[in-house]
Amino acid sequence: MADDVKSDKASDKASSDLRKLQQAEDGKKAMLDYEAEAAATRAKTEKLRALRLARDAAMPPAPAKKSPAKKAAKGSKAPKAKSRPLSEWLDDQKKDGMRD
Image 1 (tube, helix red, strand yellow):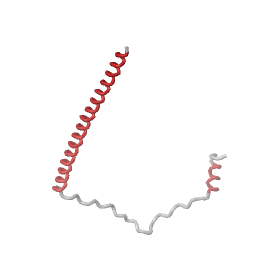
Image 2 (spheres, one colour):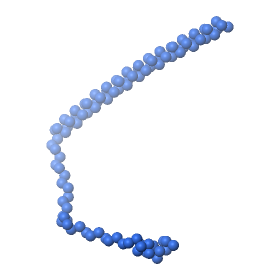
Image 3 (cartoon, rainbow, N blue to C red):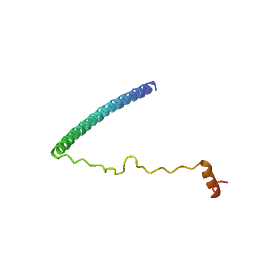
Image 4 (cartoon, rainbow, N blue to C red):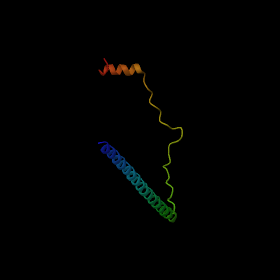
């Protein structure tokens, strides 16, 4: 029985070590894939940027848009409606049945 326990422990340790090695290898492969994808994305971005800059350089600049000019004179604002006192507002509310 003691031999069985020792062999079980040894096989458990061996399978654990094997699993750790496989995980490490999978991690390395995943990292290589990630780095390759990132490099491809950077290359594609650089290519598209160069194409955009070349296209923009070939096109004449667009004319600036003019904002509509204001016709009103500087001091001719419409006067603000004078606010009424709170007591008048409350009285109106009472008359309308809003406040009891």
